[in-house]
Image (cartoon, rainbow, N blue to C red; front, side, top):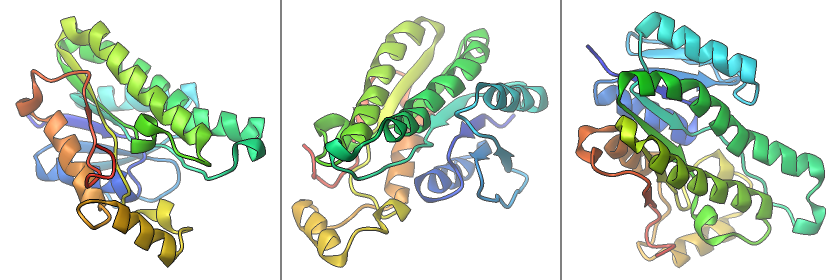
Length: 234
C-alpha cells in the first residue's frame, strides 16, 4: 500500500516541487492549497482549505483519514513572506505573518498527530528559512515566525519521539520562487554573488531535502535542521 503524504501550500513553488518529488518517490500526495487549482492524478489529490482556520483544518485531515486511513508524512510548507522596516510593521502585518507561518503549522500538526500516535509512526517535516536561523533586516516578523518553526520542530521532536515519530526542519536559502519577483536584477545578482556556490537555489533543491526526511533513510534523525542554501549561511 502506498504511503500517504499531506503537503500544505502545495499549489506553487517549493510546495509544488515537494508534492511532485514525493509522488516520484511513490507516495500518494494530498496537496493542500488555498486558491491554486491542482490538476489531480491517481497519486495527487488536491484539497482546498484555509489552514489558518481550525474547522477547515480538522475537516481536511478527517477527509484524508476517511479516504486513506492514515497519514504517514506531513509537510508543513505553507507560509508567506514580507519585507518591511520594523517601524512600519502593523499589528495586522504581525498577526497575518504568525497566522500563516506558525498558527497554520500548529493547527495542521495538532490535527494530524493523534493519527500518527495511533499508528506508532510518522514523519513531520517543517519548512523554515535561513532567516529563521540568522534573522534578516527588514524581515523581523518573518524571521521571528521562521525561528518559531525551528523551536517548534525541536520541542515536538523530543515529545513525540517515543511514539516513533520524527520531526525535522528544512531551512531554505535564497530560492527562485514567486517570493523573489519583487527583487531587482541587481538584488538577485548581489544574492548570487554572496552565495559561495555562485547560484540561487531552485524548489527541487528543497524537495530533495524533504524527500530525505520523509524516507526510511532518516529513521534515526529527529529534531534536526537541514539548510540547503549554497553556503549562504554556514
